Amino acid sequence: LSKSCNDWVRMGLTIIDALDTLFIMGFRDEFQKAKEWVKTSLQTNINQKISFFESIIRVTGGLLSAYELSGDKIFLDKAVEVQNGLNKAFDRTQSGLPISEINPVTGQGDLPGWTG
Image (cartoon, rainbow, N blue to C red; front, side, top):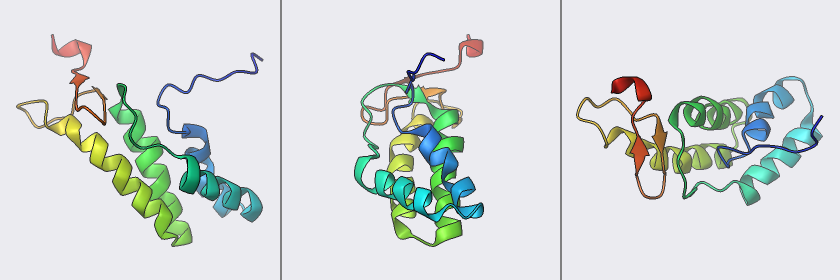
């Protein structure tokens, strides 16, 4: 093991991914710690290109799952913050399909390589 990480989306993917599992499995103390991290440390204004797809399924999806299970509005509020930045991916193409990478602050991004 390298004992290091690659935080390529810069939004704590593993913590957010684990929220629903922690809740469903009854790990309430761990869930509360993760919730506190979301509340105090999750940064939604990442000024770099991030994966639109991974951010949607893992960050927005994870936060919405946690909200649905717990009813705690902090998860819904953070999901809206994240999504406000990601929605800029739809503004960059004529087709209305999102670009694959988006900078949530500037709106700059890239189309998938297969589009030519």
